[in-house]
Length: 372
Ligand SMILES: *Cc1c(COP(=O)(O)O)cnc(C)c1O
Image (cartoon, rainbow, N blue to C red; front, side):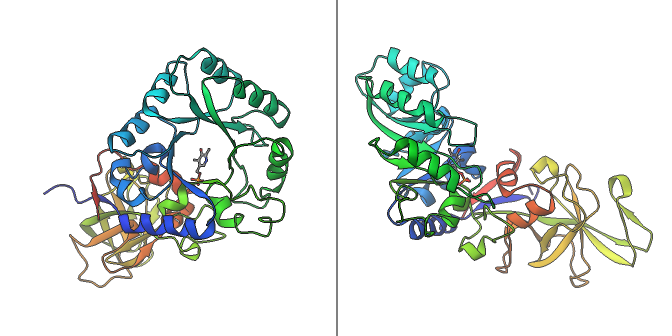
């Protein structure tokens, strides 16, 4: 029998989460962001659940090729654009739309020979200071692009640094608006947090028609995580878990007061108790920094990790479970238990001092996947 760990992708939940985004930004076309192999879910495994999107957005050229191999004929957007001049050949051949965020990318386009003019998304650095032209340099970049025969259509794009937090997006929206007011072209601004928290806010329709218009770019919310956890939970945003990481109990120990557990003896029993040893560890992608107290579901019952996470095993407290709980019992690290109980990946991430994005992307190659 194979080691009992398994990651299960829930197609219905992907479809449901996508329909939630449609409700929140009803006038916008939706890019389903599938970078990082669909946030660790697997592009091919997710495809059925995401194919009602208007476009698929990613960073890697091999992922764009995989999507075309699935016979996706719709728009594909490369969110970082080209990394070197010859990437443009693939853009021409596969009809990839690409971000233009620096002058070098414009130079490469100007030198590119193509029958097919390209559709490009000109990116503004409206305050995040990663990729893009500053508001002051934006117009000159647009004028240069607009003069190129290699370019068919220019859309305008920016990315928010604080859509999930107290600083918000108003300052970036204002910078974007001011610098693009008289430029034609479609706009795309919102990531998941901005769709959930801002796209249907009073800003919209009061001079900020660009906010959810044209295109939104949804990533993490499609995958069932609340980008602003713990202020909101995924359930409170109407999102369902799209990945369940599950395993089974493979051993049980009975502890007496004073007994310790695992490497470094970081947990000491205060009472007589039973612990389960489960077949999952950091080599499966579970965060090693998850401390004692991190939530886990055993047979659908909420309990906690005790002691240090090791490479192949984790120890869990069986106190809330009945005495018959033993080898073979179902364990859910995050996602949905057979009983229907749910453990949001956001809660595990918070306990480990990280975010769900990182956990979902980190499921290790040795973990088998299933689709339901
Ligand atoms: C990853 C990414 C997104 C999606 O972000 P989420 O927070 O996962 O919704 C949107 N736009 C750009 C440019 C990105 O890189």
